Length: 128
Image (cartoon, rainbow, N blue to C red; front, side, top):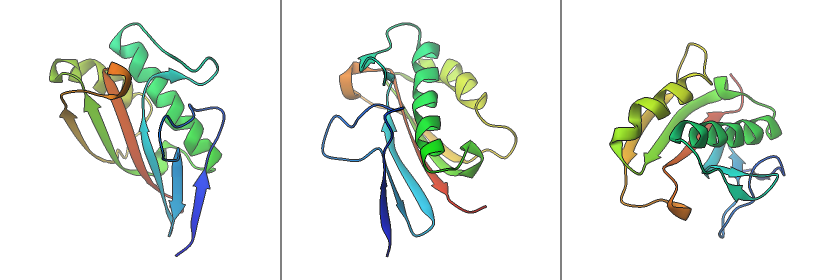
């Protein structure tokens, strides 16, 4: 097995003992991203749509560091602080894809890191 750590300063640094992403055996596994602005290392505080956009920008930066795009995503997981946020987050999330969407689940959880409202992780395939 070959394993490569992917990291970029265009996405937030990990806040624990994990990496932004790991490339292994033709896949990229991106850790859950929250709405931290990598330029300031501060949480985006605003609407859930603003949070979701920052999360997607962070994911995009990691995908770009691995030299792939959202089109390479095969599986995503969305964690929400409350299922009532689903429609707004879904609208933002969908705007970053064009056509063939990845498999996905969306779950509401009791709590998320730094008390954010949304966290998203991605598994992507390196070669289409």
